[in-house]
Image (tube, one colour):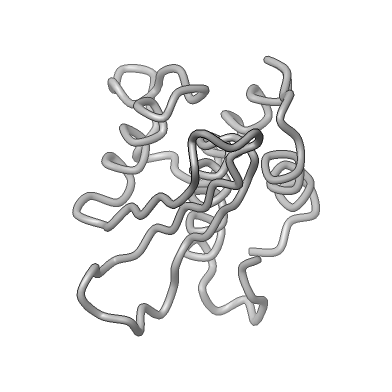
Length: 130
């Protein structure tokens, strides 16, 4: 799936440390579109995606048993966080992964989820997930 609006949302997640509620509203809409079965108002995961715990609930609902790897330094200003979502922790050849990076941990996680969801929505679109 190659969607310019999604690219803008991911770019904001990865480049800005000061997202507004409206920005997170756009992220929420994108998640709802990409993961309709995992995100429903009656599920616990449909909650505050501005927290790492909230994003982990989304990942758990959408991609149970996938590996979430987070790297960064909490003591650095703008921690330079990286997040990867992989189907297997033991293999190094996953066909599709979600990768995100951001000065804010939760935003790196959200970027990884959005990339993975977009890629899995249409894995044969011929584009590469950023």
